[in-house]
Picture 1 (cartoon, rainbow, N blue to C red):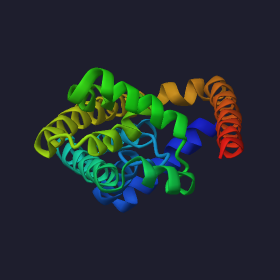
Picture 2: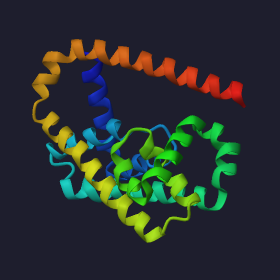
Picture 3: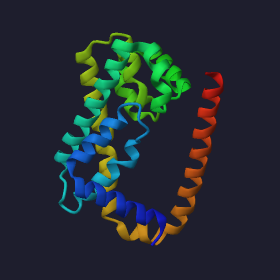
Picture 4: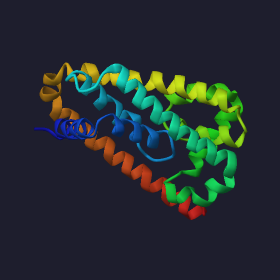
Length: 204
């Protein structure tokens, strides 16, 4: 069994065992500044739809709820603490200040609609709620944009996972070349992560 196949089985088993609550909690973390990518959660929830363990409606509700809760927490961080809070405590939350600056500029340039668009952009979606809170964006508008964008993105990934589960034999067939690519990507990510945080530490 290849590494890719093994990881898919283990992560799917974890979500299967813990149920919808794990989807909600993981997507809550994903919508905050925790390094939990939705791409590593929702496809596995989608896989479980093929087994009858989950339903599309259940996954949509659980994941969107988690995204809303996490986003509102980040919104509150920006609203009540602003940049000083993030500057002081961001390093303990694995927050890259450069990424936050990019997100702030993105929000200033394109306005409130970035809350919706940002849900489809890596890194931006983890941080976009903070400048929204700091900028005192209307909370109702923030909630609507967040819920709509998060639901569409989450269910797109779940849909991919659903079709992945229906073609398990392809994963088994191509698991070895996928393993090579995945290991390479992990190595590149780890190197980038370490370099980025060392650079941030030197600036601090």
